[in-house]
Image (tube, rainbow, N blue to C red):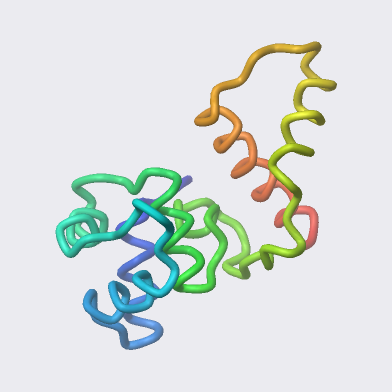
Length: 126
C-alpha cells in the first residue's frame, strides 16, 4: 500500500529534526531553471492537499537525498540512486521504443515509467 508524499515528508522531518523552512533551504540549492518549491507548495505537500509534480518531486528527493519512489510513498529503499548512476533520458526513450514497438510516450508517461523502473530496481536489490 502506498502512503502519501506528505506522510513521507513528515517522516523525514521527524527523523532529521527538520522544519519546512529547512527543507525549503535545501530545495533552493537544488532548484532548476524555472522550477522552485514555494512555501505554499511544501505546505500543501506536507498536509496532503496536493502531490508534487515530477520536476518538484525530483528537487525534493535530491535535496533530501532520498529516492523519488520512496518519497512518493512506495515500499522501497529510501536510498537515492546517484545521478551519475542513472540512465540517460535518450537511452530510456530508445529502450522503451524498442520494447513497445514504437508506441509514442508522453514525457509524463516516460517519467512514470522511470519511477516504476527505479522501484523495481530497488526491490531487486533487497
